[in-house]
Image (cartoon, rainbow, N blue to C red; front, side, top):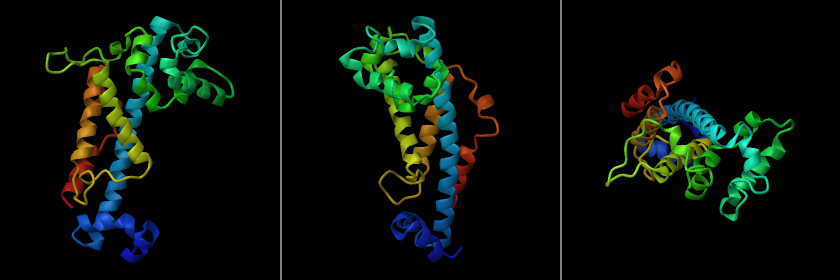
Amino acid sequence: MKYTDFEYVMTAPRMGRYLDASNGNSKKSMTLYRKNLELTQELFTVVSCFEVALRNAIDRVCIQSLGNDWLQHAVAKGGVFDTSKCKLTRDAIIDAIKKIPVYSHHKLVAELGFGFWRYMFAQNQFKMTGKILLQVFPSKPTSTPKIQYNNNYIFNQLAQLNLLRNRMAHHEPICFLPGQSVKDTTYARQHYNMILQLFHWMEVDEAALLYGLDHITDVCNKIDNL
């Protein structure tokens, strides 16, 4: 496809950043655009696998402590989330229940998004569930005076991954320095490594889980070498 046709489809404002990063080389800018899509596909797959692993791990821990149908019980009168401090979490569960034609706990777990599971490590939700959720990460480092590997640390890590997920879902590029028209894969690599670290803390064999799915480093290298 000619660049003029490609630009017409994608729009000049959208392609401008890729063209600048390619020093005005239209062919390279189209290649960079396609490689960014490839990187997004690869990284979104890994984030999705992590999201499923995370929510299932949280669910297992909560079932052990709060019962098999803990989410529905949590929003009932007197439940752990029946408090103004957890209103958004309660509302999210109630809304999700309404969307399920035939209710089951497992369908409810699947209906709730990454943002919901991230907020399970927020201070109020963490406290109301009995401060049990760090069991999800049995191999996390021991806290030090310098770094506290507590629920707030996990919450902030998940917040960064949630932001990455939303950026990719809204087709925002991930192959540039933040806010600049400079080709750089550091952002993608850092978040990828964060996921691998969290998998390790969860004692999940990420290499086996992602076998045949994970080509992120290869794609990043191709982008760097354009």
